[in-house]
Image (cartoon, rainbow, N blue to C red; front, side, top):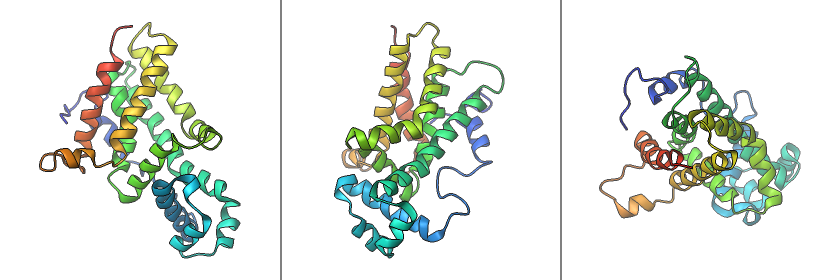
Amino acid sequence: MQIVAGRRGNLTTIDKGRAKRKGPGRPEGASVVRDEILDAAERLFANLGYAGTTLREVSHEAKVTQALINYYFGSKFGLFEEVFLRRGAAISLERMENLERLRADGQVPTVRDIVEAFLLPTAILRTTEQGRHFLRLQARLHTEPPQISYDLRTKAYGNSTQRYVEALQEAIPGLPDLDANWRITLMIGSYLYAFSDTHRMEDRLPNTFDPDDWKSLIDQVARFVVGGMSAGF
């Protein structure tokens, strides 16, 4: 990925702001045992889905009793909700902070700026093993029943997604609401597949593709998405 030093809204600008705070991950001050349960559940939900994961399996993976899981989370859905919102809410907050940094000089961000600001938190999260579990879980969430997935997605990402729809309409004056929402939705679909650790590129280009090069990953997805975002309407 080419990053031009000093360009408004480039990844260098966003990274500087990001370095001042920790990215999406384990909340500070939380119980170690509680976090270990969440980490274990995250791995299982990512691999097996909501229906395919039992509290017995989570208790075995986390090396705790089911009674302790119920004490902390109340039910399997309560656990699933905490697992998803733990990182989802942090991603959403960081996306909104990225937008604020882009607007700090009073200018309207470009479409490329907006796409990179949106992708950055999840691209960096993907560099950790537990982060990759979450991204698989997030991609899988779209196949879960609506009564499980819809409210969680809205709770985690509703506000930040709307902010990006509005930012896109600022960058492309006259873009109708329907088009703006579709373009943000299609960007989300593209990054979910690209970031969800499917090993597709490793299989196709084992000597060329570097799965740990998150900047190149952002660049590839951004170039594809920006073309669609900027299309006529």
